[in-house]
Length: 470
Image 1 (cartoon, rainbow, N blue to C red):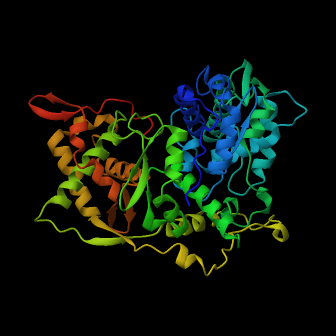
Image 2 (cartoon, one colour; image 1 turned 90 degrees about the vertical axis):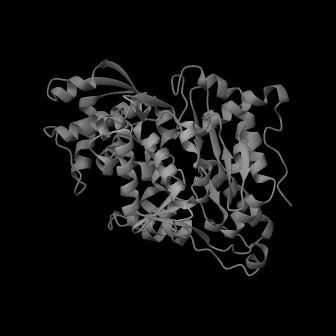
Image 3 (cartoon, rainbow, N blue to C red; image 1 turned 30 degrees about the vertical axis):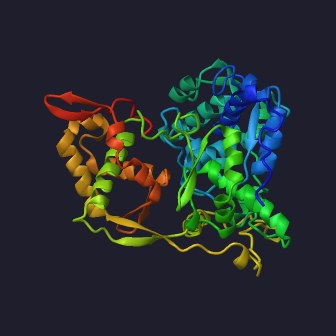
């Protein structure tokens, strides 16, 4: 039996769109304050805090922390993926490297509840010995790259309201660490809300310890409820869910009516079902950080043109791209966890209380209740063919069409476009090329959606927009 429709149960029909807008704001914001993401947002969200707290808990298993000064959604993680790193980025849009992530943790750890303000000089003096105690990290104010990393971290914290500049400037310190300084007020509540690990970090032996335990209950009803929440989380967090690539319990929950329709009422999006999977369609671009197709710069447009080229190959009766089985998401997860765990320190782990990857018990009734679906078989496009496609685009449109950033770097643009399409779950990288996933077929006529102009008699797509985030 599908779960009872309970999203927005206490919301009047006339207020439903306002409630759904508030839900989308919470889901797309890492933290909401009086100024972030924009003034007035906090008030819009707090109006519905009680109803959202209930909906997020019951439908998704998430915890909403709402006060008069900030709102933060504490998510459960069922899997790790590369897109999670997008939360941590400098003002330029460049993702934080490992040094900046480490400095961020050390700076947050240096805040003491007894202090309501801190000078930049004192902060640096506090965290420097801790940074220097970590092999391969360190901090030297004489090194430009180290100072730049600190500046990016402080800007990130100021943007989220953890710090508020009251005097001086971080730029003056970066230019002269002996004479320059800055004074910051500390908001300990927002600081605590930003850093909420699922378990004590010092007790982890694997990054898998940060993930929610899988279907470990021996009671069928408890497992069904857990499957409903995990399937809802998969559908809300990812562009598309393919039945053959997820656990049978999740595929079964999403293939039935109930979970997806509940999310549609919660968010205001539309459910789109196909034989291979399911997605929440966001035609208005109200619920995504990666609009596609759209005016997202050269990478976004090149990705669309690349999909059109791929569709031409697949639909050409004279072409016969090989068909391969798409690996399950669990295979990607094992590889990613192994890469993360390879960087864990060996010393200092409290092994007697440690959490590692949860063991999943064998439930005999699962096979009959949730049959395993056949693997997903999809077309394969070789890397050499992809390179030929991008070369054709440069020839057809002219190198100048791809902005200064990319006009001399077709291989770099190809790599960025493919990565973008993989994030959207339209392509899947495999050795030697990519697999074309079913949702890519939605964009086979994508050229019709891309604005075009005429320049000197040659077709030229509008690649306007900033490339700083690409």
